[in-house]
Image 1: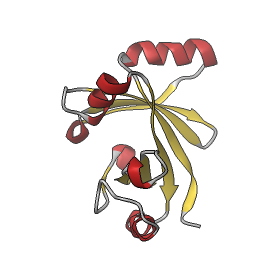
Image 2: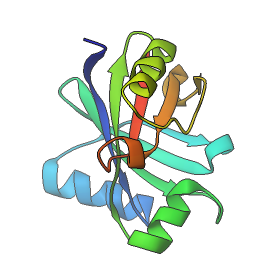
Image 3: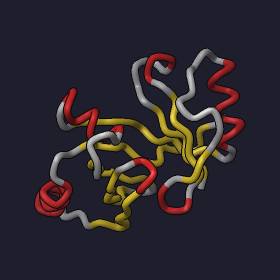
Image 4: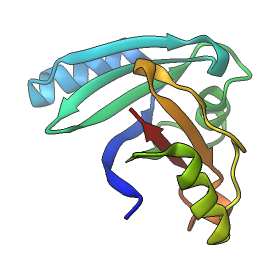
Length: 133
């Protein structure tokens, strides 16, 4: 099995501070990690849930994927991140199964991870992020 566990569920939000406050108030949650990923134009806050995360994310510029998503669809689930032992092998396996990669090769992600995205059109309508720690 290539997938080792669910890394995160990413939720696109307009106001990151307000979203963090909601999760703190509603669930007693606290932010474990916060980061701006400049090359993707996003800011994220990770809330740990067992061995996985809820990733609250917002765009930092108009052309970022999150900003475009929010403009088109509004707030909500953006993608699912799956942990894998080998991101390159996971891309190959998904392509062999008919998926279309957004990232043809793994690239640096947040928290020092290696990541790659798979397009929803070839993945049952779900944007998938492969995450190698």
